[in-house]
Image 1 (cartoon, rainbow, N blue to C red):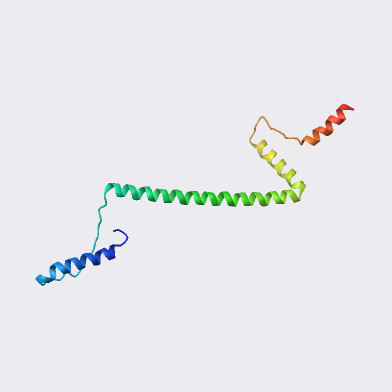
Image 2: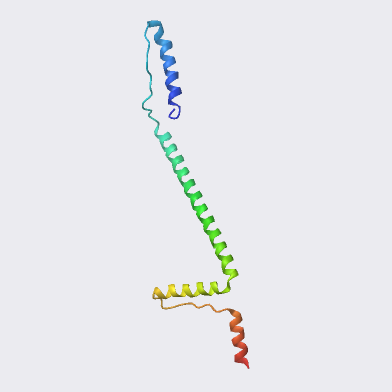
Length: 123
């Protein structure tokens, strides 16, 4: 009803013309101005609108996640081509941690470095 008011107006005009023509009366304008919907229909429409908003929200979120993953993949390619970039990024992260005045910093050390130290200690 709401989406096809013009068709509804024309149909009501035809019905009125059919019933008033024998009396010589012509209705010149018919317009549906307000449609009162049942409460259940209003709730159903509200649920549909909410579902549509949630759908759009999820799509936008997924597109953002996809774009972020592409950027991370691009960053990984750059880091893989330049070995020093990963070290610089690592040091930058440590600097950021230090600014937060944390008392504990976990400092990962490559295992191959520890293996070399073990050889030196066993000599």
